[in-house]
Image (cartoon, rainbow, N blue to C red; front, side, top):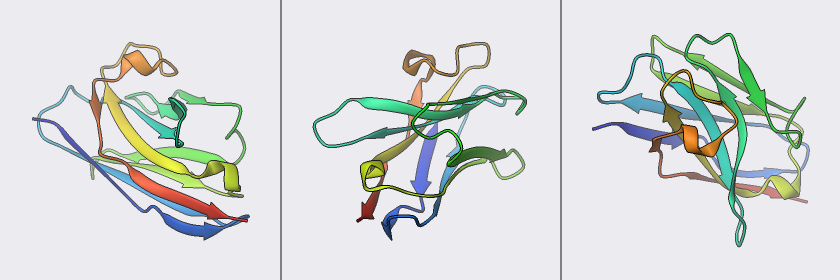
Length: 124
C-alpha cells in the first residue's frame, strides 16, 4: 500500500511563504513522478507543479511559475513545494500525487496515488 502524507499547510498573509512536504511510504514504482495539485472550494483539482523521477524535468502551471518550486529528496522519500509571494487566490487544499515514470507530468491522469491534502489559507 502506498501512502502519501502532506504537511506544512496553514494560514499565511499575502506575500508570505510556505513550504509543503509530502512523505511517500510503502511499495511504489521506483522513483515515481511526483506532482502537486490544489483544489479550491467549488473548483476542480488543478496541477501546479511536477517533477519527474530522475529530477531533471519539471512542469509548472502558468499561475505559479516564478513563485512555486518543486523539489525532492529521494533519500528521504519526500517531495517539497516551496511557495513564495502567496496570494489570496492561492487559498485551497493542496495535494501531492505519485505516478509512474514515462507519463506526462502535466496530466492529472498520469498520477495513481494521492495524499489526503493540506489546507493553505492566504489572508489579504
